[in-house]
Image (cartoon, rainbow, N blue to C red; front, top):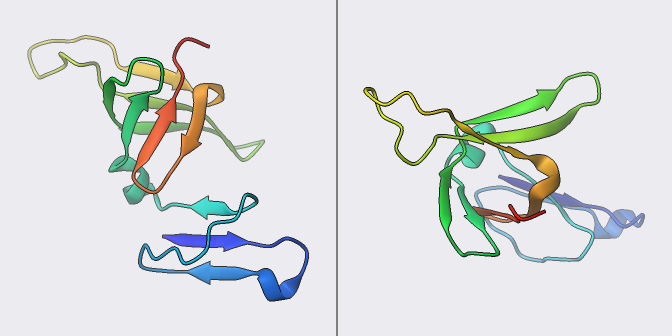
Length: 106
């Protein structure tokens, strides 16, 4: 994982590796690898329910942004063909170090 932030002053620019976060400012940007995102648990902040883990990301290539997160439905297995759950990126409240907080009531 890399953390990079820059408030316009080059002395305050930092890049860190190996999941070490020495400083956390309001204007920091946390960059995760796809493997790191897939291991992040999705939690609904309204109910506290664990919704699952990221299975896929839907990305708008033209605008270079994440559109939504796909997680498997709770009862999905080889014999059950339930649809995956798509959470629009606009419902993501915070993407932290090991969890993604969403508000599904929005």
